[in-house]
Length: 88
Ligand SMILES: [Zn+2]
Image (cartoon, rainbow, N blue to C red; front, side):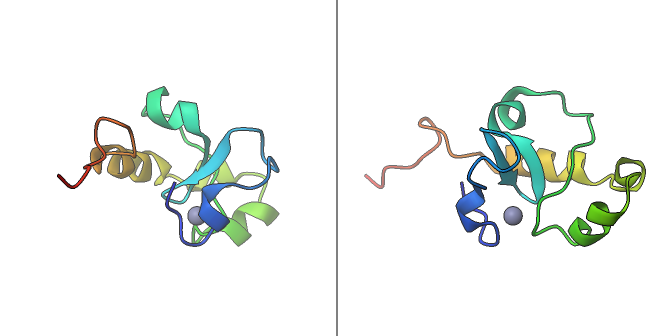
């Protein structure tokens, strides 16, 4: 997983065993691959709204770009075995 900001995307299980940073979205990696695309997720520490989210219990009402971030990540081709070029 390639988040440059969040220590490789993992958080030592801090947010749940399989929760990672996916393009700035804090999400279970299985959900990132297969979950619904219209759900608002919390943001990850590298997201510009991270600090605000920590102090605002209503974060989900105004953090609304996680769907787009997730969609962008999916369209980029997440790292899967089929998609990884082997370089001939
Ligand atoms: Zn991150």
